[in-house]
Length: 599
Image 1 (cartoon, helix red, strand yellow):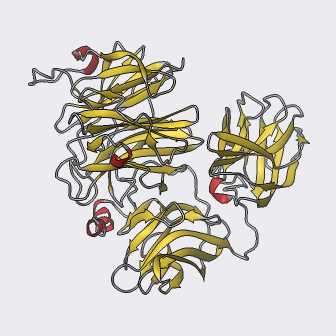
Image 2: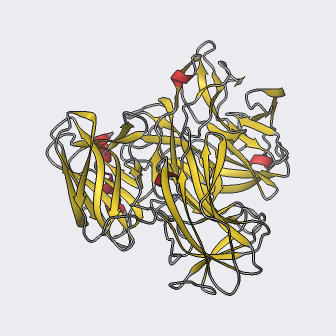
């Protein structure tokens, strides 16, 4: 596998015109398949299967989790669930689906039941989207020899579990999500509902497998793998969760070098995204697949346009802050390396040989970086990390060297000076040295020119529009030139539906437990004189607590008001999300934000 991935960059360069860089498939360190996206607390997670290297069948023993906030850089969370999770399972960790309810995450997966030799659907459960997951019931939830579970929770709270190949089934799940009422119901596969297949009397419709059922704007969608082999992706719609279904056509044609495909569709941060798999990586094919993603826009009537596979992937929706700790396993592209567990928890980069590299897309250096540090380990003689800009052989901004540390999990931190890293650029960490594995990488971080404190907020000046910002709750956030404190832009929040709605930034990875932070945010009312304050929402497990970062101050339309304050931030347990946002004491008036900082 590592030898295959070493030539990825060469193959991509041959396929794409300069200076384009591929970001699809989204994972390059292993083969992944059957994507299932989930949005939780402002972060997009994708749950995948794992095709073993060199497979000549669907040889799959565990499942994987990846996540992103910018649709370009993906964090590898490892394998929180495997066949070993289910004592009654013997093989075939195939396509699953994760949903959240009541602060718990349920992972529905098909596995082979050791007792019967048939495929059955089990349920893993966790209090965290990244696991670990345990067997929720110690036995199959459903067993009829068929596969590909998918769960949809309707607006009235009723949850449905769909699955099936060659048929299409559903049950109504109870609110505990691990039992159901009634018996399994078979959905009629009619040509009107699922299209007509020619030349196969036993399977007259296009439906093959992999249902992905969801509701959007009052319409129910069933996106599915159609007409093996090779498969394309088709879809049907219905006025209700169980039908009647009407076939609407092709979403993704037969493409990509894999005779199967498997879709996952989701809306995230104002965009719609279509996940799928193909055989695009070296050594890839029908049994060694890779997950990819495209952004798309629904037509005005709610229909889905034709979506083609690309190597470019979706646009990056926010930049990455280099002045806070960033995990080594957060990358847009990884060439030659692997990920592996790190002592003390989490994942890291391993097996880094001479010439291997990591690409981190859209890094916002601002006025400039002065130094770079990285936590590394080496059971050999060590090597160097070349900090390059724009490409793996691009501008050399600095070099950090390390010797052997006495073990691949014996960690030390190295630091080196940086020059020329400013603005927003793609960062490449290139490994250099002798033969064999050089070093492991846990995390990295830059320090701005001059050292000292740095703004933990991305695009605090709003000069890059809404880059780095999101809406906490309801409302619309946009760049504004009508009221500006400095520079040429501010942010305007309109359409708020509650007083706590407002401009926000996720700062989860930027905070230290027990740290003291100063917040400065300039605000200006669009109408009226509401009172505003900055608040930090901290989520650990299923509990969210709130820290008031600034005292409340009155806004007005005639000038700018500074929200400023200092607060100590601490939490118990594992911090899964931290969001800094501006809210008002009452009302839903719109307002502007400019020159925001968290230090």
